[in-house]
Length: 95
Picture 1 (cartoon, one colour):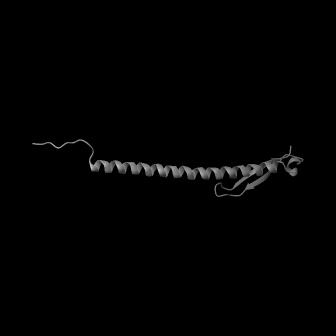
Picture 2 (cartoon, rainbow, N blue to C red; picture 1 turned 120 degrees about the horizontal axis):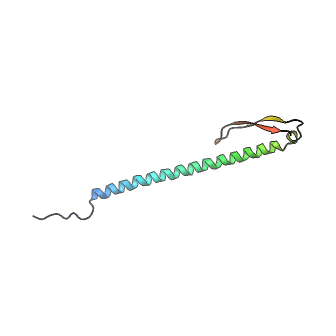
Picture 3 (tube, rainbow, N blue to C red; picture 1 turned 90 degrees about the horizontal axis):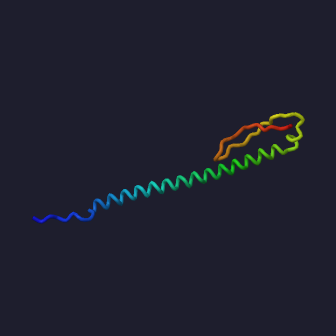
């Protein structure tokens, strides 16, 4: 009786390997797109933070704040942006 050779891969094995590679590739692509989206969100948030910090520093340097006769706190409100919520804080003025 002749015995069939078992060398090599079958078509089913190759199809399963291809399916696994496709699933891994789709997962990697989804992860890369998520990282890119989060990076853009973080960059816009950092720009909002820088703008808020500049406004805070500008408020500290106004003559009304610098020349205040007594130490005082002044409310400072930053409006909400698509990447940051509204923020209400206080700014110290005077000496």
